Length: 391
Ligand code: GLA
Image (cartoon, rainbow, N blue to C red; front, side):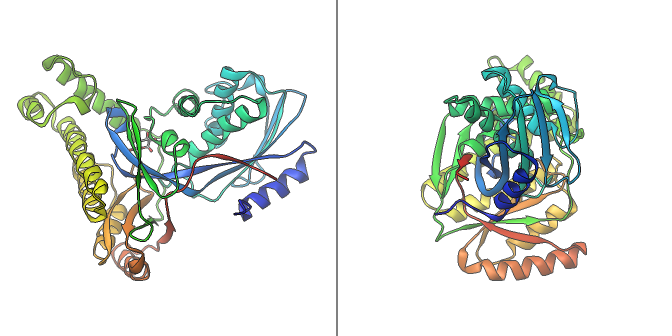
């Protein structure tokens, strides 16, 4: 099957217009998380898929130590900076994600002699589909390939995660970079963020398609609310640790222990902790259902997770709620929830293929009635991870 696609062709065309260097092409997908919301930095289990859309990068070596960078999503904004001058805090603009990937990978494996780089994406930005992590991952991958390093996938995950936490400055967990690098066609990844164990659980495409429904409202991840949730969980954990020996993360706290010590927590902290502790159980039940081949059982846990994200973790929005409510009204929709951090962006739903047309019709209409907004619905099957593409 040809891996050529229109966004890649456009990117290559632009590259050839501005660079004489030999072109090397790379792609890294986005992701949708189906279960395990806000669990990665709490030591829980996450269950994402990689998407067939993401970030394309056209890269070529130059010999003058400079980085010349363009993104087709930000026409006219050319970044020109010596590679040796990349450092955290240099910028907080769109280029920080790829700069972070290049910076951390070069710290690990050595400097490139100079780089011409053009990015193009077919994934909407700031919509909860990890467009930023896909840029970090493609940055790490291209440095490894151009330096001829045979990098281990876990090392690449770790580096791409470091690009986000150290260069961009968001205190995120390991979900996004793991989902991207370990993506496999037709399977949901089950990744235990504490034990680091992983399993690819089959999702039969005759049984279920993934609908990504865009609320049309973007979210700002780096801007405070996400880091605030991380800080709240850390505070709740500290309180539990004073009471319960051996607890290393919120995932370690049982329901009974939570009930016993709940009065020590301020109400908002208790709600955050309860979401995490319940979500541990939901991911357990969701995994068990999927193992039995019961997509409906898995979908029910997705919808329950959304209710908890709305009421306890408080990261939903009226638009996300309206989309989930409209989605689960359709016969053949197994479940739906916000995907990503929340605060806007997209929902993910699992839908029987025979119900796709009805799903599109009903959700589009209901969502418009309730919110006055239009939605965009795209269909996906779980896809593979980052690749170099022959050009
Ligand atoms: C964002 C973060 C991830 C994860 C999710 C919520 O995508 O980058 O690390 O915490 O939110 O599940």
